[in-house]
Length: 182
Image 1 (cartoon, rainbow, N blue to C red):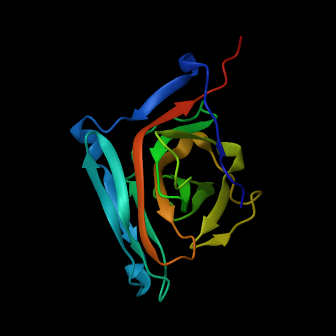
Image 2: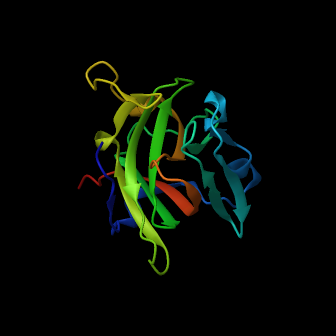
Protein backbone atom coordinates (compact mmCIF):
# COMPACT_ATOMS: atom_id res chain seq x y z
CA UNK A 1 0.00 0.00 0.00
CA UNK A 2 1.31 3.46 -0.85
CA UNK A 3 2.27 6.07 1.72
CA UNK A 4 0.73 9.52 1.82
CA UNK A 5 3.22 12.32 1.55
CA UNK A 6 3.58 15.13 4.03
CA UNK A 7 3.44 18.41 2.16
CA UNK A 8 2.29 21.97 2.37
CA UNK A 9 -0.24 23.18 -0.18
CA UNK A 10 0.76 26.67 -1.23
CA UNK A 11 -2.40 27.53 -3.13
CA UNK A 12 -5.18 28.21 -0.60
CA UNK A 13 -7.65 29.14 -3.35
CA UNK A 14 -7.66 25.49 -4.43
CA UNK A 15 -8.73 24.16 -1.02
CA UNK A 16 -12.20 23.75 0.48
CA UNK A 17 -12.76 23.00 4.15
CA UNK A 18 -14.62 19.76 4.87
CA UNK A 19 -14.19 19.69 8.67
CA UNK A 20 -12.96 22.21 11.24
CA UNK A 21 -14.85 20.58 14.14
CA UNK A 22 -16.45 23.85 15.23
CA UNK A 23 -20.11 23.17 14.42
CA UNK A 24 -22.24 20.46 16.02
CA UNK A 25 -23.03 18.89 12.62
CA UNK A 26 -19.28 18.32 12.07
CA UNK A 27 -19.10 16.50 15.39
CA UNK A 28 -22.34 14.50 15.32
CA UNK A 29 -21.53 12.53 12.17
CA UNK A 30 -18.61 10.44 13.52
CA UNK A 31 -18.84 6.77 14.53
CA UNK A 32 -16.36 4.24 15.97
CA UNK A 33 -15.68 0.74 14.63
CA UNK A 34 -13.19 -1.32 16.63
CA UNK A 35 -11.96 -4.90 16.32
CA UNK A 36 -14.58 -6.04 18.84
CA UNK A 37 -16.80 -6.59 15.78
CA UNK A 38 -14.65 -9.71 15.23
CA UNK A 39 -13.85 -10.60 18.83
CA UNK A 40 -10.86 -8.29 19.30
CA UNK A 41 -9.91 -6.34 22.42
CA UNK A 42 -8.69 -2.97 21.15
CA UNK A 43 -10.29 0.11 22.64
CA UNK A 44 -10.55 3.34 20.73
CA UNK A 45 -12.83 6.16 19.87
CA UNK A 46 -13.05 9.88 19.37
CA UNK A 47 -13.62 13.04 21.34
CA UNK A 48 -13.46 16.75 20.62
CA UNK A 49 -11.15 19.06 22.52
CA UNK A 50 -10.71 22.75 21.68
CA UNK A 51 -12.25 22.26 18.21
CA UNK A 52 -9.97 19.32 17.42
CA UNK A 53 -10.97 15.74 16.64
CA UNK A 54 -9.03 13.38 18.92
CA UNK A 55 -8.84 9.72 17.86
CA UNK A 56 -7.31 7.77 20.74
CA UNK A 57 -7.28 4.48 22.61
CA UNK A 58 -5.12 1.36 22.74
CA UNK A 59 -4.69 -1.44 20.24
CA UNK A 60 -4.41 -5.09 21.25
CA UNK A 61 -3.17 -7.45 18.54
CA UNK A 62 -4.51 -10.53 20.36
CA UNK A 63 -7.73 -10.97 18.38
CA UNK A 64 -7.68 -8.05 15.98
CA UNK A 65 -5.48 -5.04 16.58
CA UNK A 66 -7.44 -2.22 15.01
CA UNK A 67 -9.53 0.79 15.90
CA UNK A 68 -11.24 3.16 13.48
CA UNK A 69 -13.48 6.17 13.22
CA UNK A 70 -15.39 7.51 10.22
CA UNK A 71 -18.25 9.73 9.29
CA UNK A 72 -21.71 8.41 8.57
CA UNK A 73 -22.49 8.53 4.83
CA UNK A 74 -23.23 12.09 3.72
CA UNK A 75 -22.86 14.20 0.59
CA UNK A 76 -19.26 15.48 0.47
CA UNK A 77 -19.17 16.88 -3.10
CA UNK A 78 -15.67 15.59 -3.92
CA UNK A 79 -16.17 14.91 -7.64
CA UNK A 80 -13.77 17.69 -8.67
CA UNK A 81 -11.29 17.18 -5.83
CA UNK A 82 -7.88 15.63 -6.35
CA UNK A 83 -7.47 14.67 -2.70
CA UNK A 84 -7.46 15.93 0.86
CA UNK A 85 -5.05 17.65 3.18
CA UNK A 86 -5.17 16.75 6.87
CA UNK A 87 -3.63 18.96 9.56
CA UNK A 88 -2.66 16.70 12.48
CA UNK A 89 -0.50 15.97 15.52
CA UNK A 90 0.29 12.38 16.40
CA UNK A 91 2.41 9.88 18.29
CA UNK A 92 4.75 8.32 15.73
CA UNK A 93 2.48 5.41 14.80
CA UNK A 94 1.20 4.64 11.30
CA UNK A 95 -2.43 5.50 10.60
CA UNK A 96 -4.67 4.82 7.64
CA UNK A 97 -6.95 7.34 5.95
CA UNK A 98 -9.88 5.99 3.97
CA UNK A 99 -12.88 6.99 1.91
CA UNK A 100 -15.99 5.01 1.04
CA UNK A 101 -18.57 5.37 -1.71
CA UNK A 102 -22.10 5.43 -0.35
CA UNK A 103 -22.75 2.75 2.23
CA UNK A 104 -20.19 0.38 0.69
CA UNK A 105 -18.03 -1.80 2.95
CA UNK A 106 -15.17 -1.33 0.48
CA UNK A 107 -12.68 1.23 1.75
CA UNK A 108 -10.17 3.03 -0.45
CA UNK A 109 -7.25 3.71 1.86
CA UNK A 110 -3.66 4.74 2.29
CA UNK A 111 -1.15 4.68 5.16
CA UNK A 112 0.35 7.83 6.57
CA UNK A 113 3.26 7.82 8.99
CA UNK A 114 3.47 10.29 11.83
CA UNK A 115 6.48 11.64 13.67
CA UNK A 116 6.65 11.00 17.41
CA UNK A 117 8.79 13.97 18.35
CA UNK A 118 7.38 16.43 15.80
CA UNK A 119 6.69 19.83 17.28
CA UNK A 120 3.58 21.61 16.15
CA UNK A 121 1.01 20.67 13.57
CA UNK A 122 1.89 18.67 10.43
CA UNK A 123 0.03 18.27 7.16
CA UNK A 124 -0.52 15.11 5.14
CA UNK A 125 -1.48 15.51 1.50
CA UNK A 126 -3.45 12.51 0.29
CA UNK A 127 -4.14 12.07 -3.41
CA UNK A 128 -7.23 10.05 -4.31
CA UNK A 129 -5.33 8.32 -7.16
CA UNK A 130 -2.99 6.78 -4.57
CA UNK A 131 -5.74 5.07 -2.56
CA UNK A 132 -5.99 1.27 -2.66
CA UNK A 133 -9.36 -0.51 -2.58
CA UNK A 134 -9.69 -2.92 0.35
CA UNK A 135 -12.38 -5.07 1.91
CA UNK A 136 -11.73 -6.21 5.48
CA UNK A 137 -8.01 -5.66 4.96
CA UNK A 138 -7.82 -7.54 1.65
CA UNK A 139 -6.55 -5.56 -1.34
CA UNK A 140 -8.91 -5.50 -4.29
CA UNK A 141 -8.02 -4.99 -7.97
CA UNK A 142 -8.24 -1.32 -8.96
CA UNK A 143 -9.75 -2.25 -12.33
CA UNK A 144 -12.74 -3.87 -10.63
CA UNK A 145 -13.07 -1.53 -7.62
CA UNK A 146 -12.20 1.91 -8.95
CA UNK A 147 -12.91 5.02 -6.93
CA UNK A 148 -15.62 7.35 -8.23
CA UNK A 149 -14.82 10.60 -6.40
CA UNK A 150 -18.33 11.95 -7.02
CA UNK A 151 -19.74 9.04 -4.96
CA UNK A 152 -17.49 9.47 -1.90
CA UNK A 153 -19.78 9.82 1.12
CA UNK A 154 -17.56 8.82 4.02
CA UNK A 155 -14.02 9.36 5.19
CA UNK A 156 -12.20 8.08 8.22
CA UNK A 157 -9.08 7.07 10.10
CA UNK A 158 -7.86 3.69 11.23
CA UNK A 159 -4.93 2.37 13.21
CA UNK A 160 -3.84 -1.13 12.27
CA UNK A 161 -0.04 -1.15 12.46
CA UNK A 162 0.28 -4.56 14.16
CA UNK A 163 1.51 -2.99 17.42
CA UNK A 164 0.01 -3.14 20.89
CA UNK A 165 -0.38 -0.03 22.97
CA UNK A 166 -1.84 3.45 23.24
CA UNK A 167 -2.39 5.73 20.28
CA UNK A 168 -3.45 9.33 19.78
CA UNK A 169 -4.11 11.23 16.57
CA UNK A 170 -5.36 14.83 16.77
CA UNK A 171 -6.98 16.37 13.69
CA UNK A 172 -7.19 20.17 13.40
CA UNK A 173 -8.95 20.20 10.02
CA UNK A 174 -9.58 18.28 6.82
CA UNK A 175 -9.70 20.11 3.47
CA UNK A 176 -10.34 18.94 -0.07
CA UNK A 177 -7.97 20.25 -2.70
CA UNK A 178 -8.11 20.55 -6.47
CA UNK A 179 -5.37 21.44 -8.85
CA UNK A 180 -6.00 24.95 -10.05
CA UNK A 181 -6.42 25.14 -13.79
CA UNK A 182 -5.01 28.39 -15.15
